[in-house]
Image (spheres, one colour):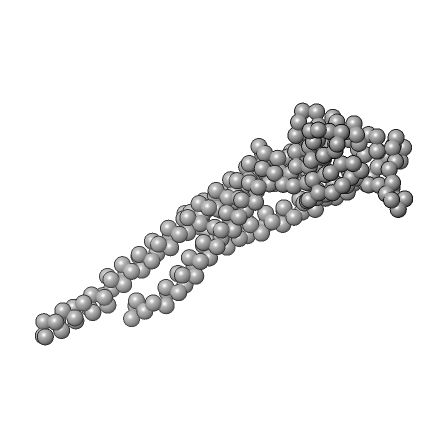
Amino acid sequence: MFLKRRAGHRTARFFASPKFKQDIKEDLRTKNDEKMKKASILMIVGSLFLMGLFVFPLWQIMLLAPQYPDPLGLNIFIDGIKGVEEFDIQNIDGLNHYIGMKTLPKADQMWEFSTFPKIIGGMAALGVLIGILGLIGKLRYPWFLGWFLLMSVLGILGMYDFNIWLVDYGTNLDPNAIMKLTNPDGSAMTYKPPLLGNTKMANFDVTSYPTTGGFLLFVGMALTLLAFYLGWRQDKKQSKAKYVPLDQ
C-alpha cells in the first residue's frame, strides 16, 4: 500500500511538473501551426485558380434558331470576346445589322478588357501573398476572409458592369435599321441577352451562363472561404485550450 501511494505521488508530481506542462503546450502549438499551414495552402491554391481566367472564358452566350442547325455562340473572356466557332461573331454581327444592333466590340473598344486582366492578376497575386504570409505566421486567418469579401465585391461590380453593357447592346438600336420588329403590344422590340438564364428573342432562344473560367473562379473563391473557416475553427479550439489549468 505504501509503495502504491508513493507511485501515485510520483505520477501526480510528473503531471504537475513544469516539463510536462511545457510539453503539452508545445504539442498544442505544433498542431495549431499545422492547421494554419493547411489553411494557408488552401488560400494560395484558391487564389491561383483565378489564373484560369487568362486561359478559359468566363461566360458564354448561345443563340439557337431553326435556321441554324449549329447554334451561334460567344465566349466572353476577361480580355475580349471570341466566337464559339470560327465564324460565329461574323454571323451574329450580320444578323444584328438588319435589326439595328451594334457590332460586337473589339478588345480595344472596351476599357473593361484592359482593366479586368489587371484586377484578376492583382487579386491572384495578393491572395498568394496573403497565403504565404499566413504560412510563415506573419498573418492570421481574418485576412483570408478580407480577400474573399474584396473579391466578392469586385465580382458583383463586374457583373453589374456586364449587365449595363448588355442593356446598351440590346436596346440602343439604329433608328434606320432595315428591320424594325415590334412586340404584340406595338412597342419596339429590344434584344438584351439575359445576364443569367435563357430568354426568347425573335425566333432565337438565347442562353447565358458561366463556363469553364467562371467555374474556376467560383471554386477558387470557395477554397479561400474554406481556408478562412479552417483558420477560424482552429483559433476557436486554441482559445478553449487556454483555459486548461496547465499552470496551476
